[in-house]
Length: 130
Image (cartoon, rainbow, N blue to C red; front, side, top):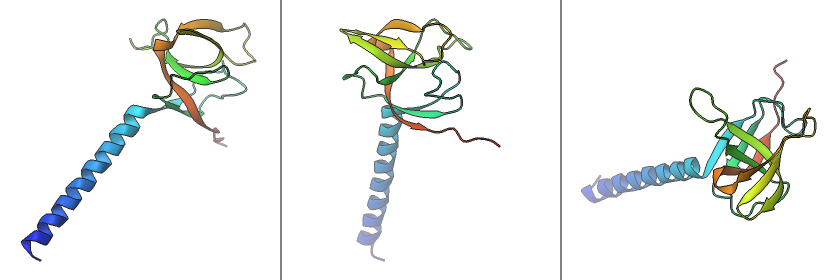
């Protein structure tokens, strides 16, 4: 194999590796996977169910969208927990969010748009362990 063919093959491999790394970085920065832990969003979301949120799609939020955000007043090991809620109203730089229909008390609050981490774009059904 000539030196030019070897160099071209090496450059091709390095370019493919760099393209793969760039794609992985874009996916990591652009999306997040969240696992539902609580029961506040029943019957829509069940504990153990997985969600994918688009971190770049937080500008055009509408009533009915599911969002992921970090509530600063919840803490686990010094870090805020992720919360998943449905938007029940949008007004300026704030949104009103609510939990599922089976909450014992209405769980509605107003949050600032700047704490929203992503808009849910995909959910997976929880698989029974039985």
